[in-house]
Length: 328
Image (tube, rainbow, N blue to C red; front, side, top):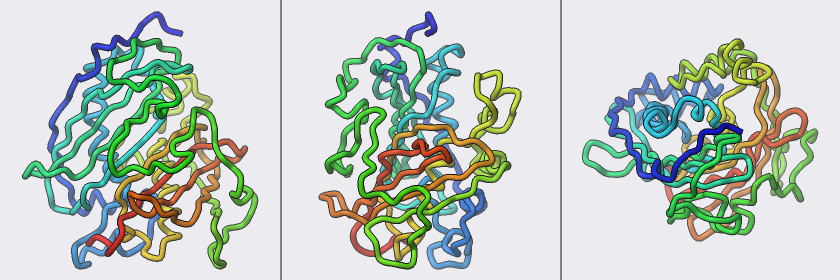
């Protein structure tokens, strides 16, 4: 454990806004990095233009996350951060050719057994100030103590630091407590994909190529050398380079949407997960999920992703879909 401590005064520190130009080239590159082939992600002649992958917002949010961390944390603490939780609300579809503005704020800070748990709130609006996406990006700073902020949820019974809000599933087991995962009723990880027959559950194996982190880094424009530079990764205490958490989540989301009849056009309102085991390169993921369940917020699809030894890389995953027609 480091002798440094994160003070409660970091809550409220804000960076931005930063403006980003969202072009079709960036949208297509992100989808290509994930191995997508659906024309909705690449057909620039399509009515309404190419679709953005549901997790594309991480691309324009990353620079703001770096900005606010640099303002709030010294380097000796920042290097201890790991992506722990992710929650995204999509207010309306992202479109090629528009300019968006993102602001990042330290929203909550609370102590957890592994270390300090900090949530960044990343809010993105269009040029008229209308909301486009909102993300709560939770990080654990391993071995780092902190002072709880007045806004931080206290105790496991209040969601382990997840910010509550409208439009999020409130069903039993979401989100679960730290380290837990309900496995009853899931297909075993060695089961073959069950795409051809009706079932309440499905399971798909996803190969992770040795160069995926390099491709994802450049296509997403998210650069952290622990994902591409072996020397840096080992100096940080890792056995080797590892796949980005957002790439792992995006791959799981892609597989989940492929089990929806609408595919990429399925109207995603919100999504989120907890992160667990690191994903080495090369390796394989097993992504498994359930049929949509009704909820007050909309049909909710639950999913998870396991690394080769059966540990959870993504747990408690959920996608909330909108009722009605797909976005264009």
